Image: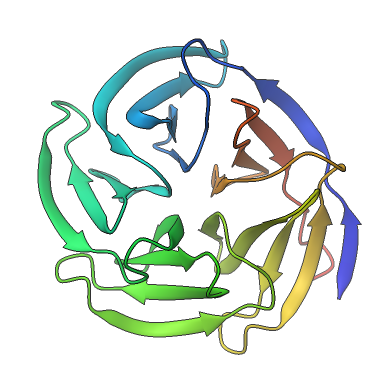
Length: 214
């Protein structure tokens, strides 16, 4: 397994009236982050929040190219980002123990925090299609270029892990600095990850390792 220190490129926040940052996602322009009772759109260039949607937003967040998906307690909401309307809901697979959320291959990937699992879920019905085991608690989840990454956060330690999506084997680990936790994870599709910072109220950009050696 390849192990290295995470390189934090930038910190955003803490943001006004935001005590907690949970899930994060990226729509190609803005970083959306969940903060309990609303979803917020962050401009990563200016570092400012440009709008917010009043909606329950307790854990993972995802974007499918058109809609936002947001975990709220024991359900996953499908949201129109233009209007803020909740268009549909499906049951969350861990029934309230859900954490990270990602969109890939036409499906949702949902972290099961204490279950140390990642579930692939049908976005229309909530049916679990497959499950990947992890050996650490799962916070954020993201897919990029066919790579499955998830975040962990136990005590004072947090890291980003690349898994073999077939076996769950840990292939690579990026260790965050002591005391810097990751509550949500999303790739920008290129060279960086966006990480929710939990009770710090921050969002952090972390360098994604190059795959030249692959």
